[in-house]
Amino acid sequence: MSQIYPAMTTLSASAMRRQQGMIFETVKKRPILFTHHGHAAGVLVHPDVWNRLLERLEDQADLIVALTVELEAERGEAEFEPADIAELEALADGETLSA
Image 1 (cartoon, rainbow, N blue to C red):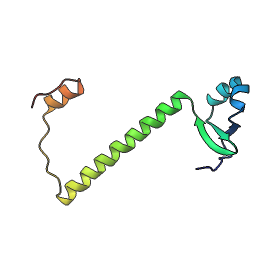
Image 2 (image 1 turned 135 degrees about the horizontal axis):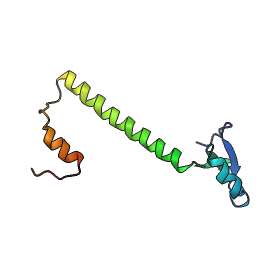
Image 3 (image 1 turned 180 degrees about the vertical axis):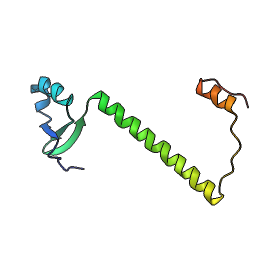
């Protein structure tokens, strides 16, 4: 993945030390692509952006699991037991259930 993305602010690795103030201001608005010897070396994003990206990845993973279970159920490949609401509420509250 050495492609440089022109829509992203791009800085050389050596510029990191010289332009710290500008880097911190820029990353509040958009990601910064750092290069090393002309090749993509890393991307700096604001922590809020990083957290949103992680949440979206987790949501996508949850959706994949849900769709997989739904597909297995439609194919008759999965067996389900009725949920116990009290147990689900206890799990949601962080309680550990005994077997």
